[in-house]
Image 1 (cartoon, helix red, strand yellow):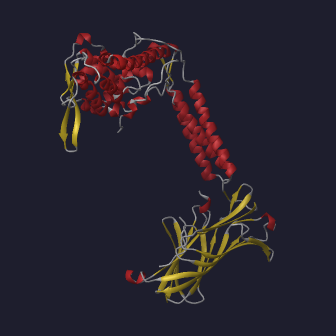
Image 2 (tube, rainbow, N blue to C red):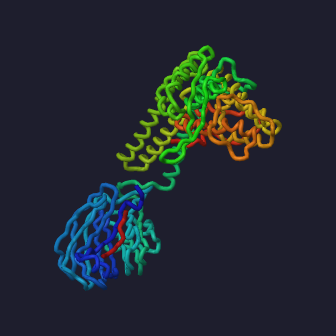
Image 3 (cartoon, rainbow, N blue to C red):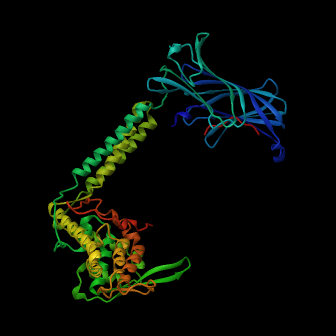
Length: 565
């Protein structure tokens, strides 16, 4: 709850019982506003308000007073009187969480004064070791010019407080003793239209009230949140598993692409995307890129043509091809096979655990998430039921523990020594291939294109490889006449760019198919650029920095002012 919501003494609005045309001709000012708050020994407020209206044009017959409080302080003992006119009726209602006192009076166009009295229970607050009275006289700004505003806050004689112990804000106000009570008074000659006015009085704590945080409380609470999150970060770092250095120029012989995806912590869809390109390279699948007119415009489509050789397929590839054979386009496959892909990759992860390359910490992660959630709920429960600064510390501690639990729970799967060695070797190989292709782009673009396509099924596991990165090779081909020899499985039915050279035209189907695949598979591999979140990434020492062209770039799916009308 904001400090400004402790007590808001808001607007008086006079409403016409006439039509819109007449309402536009109404004019008035507030010529005198006196508000006195009598603080009771039990922390309640007895409020007396006297507001003089200078009606300048039009006839007025109704008014209301809004008393806005977000806590449970009860409003009672409401009374409205006027020395100039009779009050016909008074009622109290709540509108959008705002309690209002309404009254009606005889039609009037001459100036009138209205006296509004009411009581607010349990209104006093405390901040640190001090009690606080806070008034938003015009929280949202005056609707009309308001002259001669006087605000008085009177403390009970039972409070043991000296004048020098009382602080007023604005500090231009005076504190004096009247009839055994301390009274803080603030005066404003004029509150311009649109200007706000808030008043606060604080003094040494005399009675328990709803606690308001101090700046130190908030700072200490922030420290608790940071400490909780840091503890989770330290735990996640310590549980990250081994990180041996490795250098390799080819993938580990006993690691296929689906296992590599699971080992690196990449998104499941990347295993199918990488395998798909390998099947194309080996002649088991043909990808035909085309553009089709639809209601929303032209759409890229990749058609599938499956012609497998069962003797040259692994179990994973055989299951994949069988599923592909039932779909006409790649987009259909990604849309319809979420369950299939999840089941297949679950089997792949089980194989990693069986081989001893990864450890499953699902139970630990679940307990951390559950404990963090309980801590967070406990913090909010403390705020709801507590009544001191300690409850705020419990809230911040709960938030910190919840944050730390979420961070630490990220380590759901970790590598063993054997798994880390293979993951390190794979990443070393991928970095080496990226470097070699970028080097060949400058010396032999045709060889760069051939090497890229040959290594593409593995390179798709690297977080720098995307259509944009592949286009660098296409641009390099513009400067050569040597035509690369590429697999027949990449086919584009879209006319090549006008004036494109033979090398570019040969390579263009790879680029266009890659772009269409990125678009159609966004739901499956859109987060591939964040691969390795569970296990972490490290670039081999000495590797040169590269452009960050990540697959992650693929798109994935009130107080009231005084007023009158």
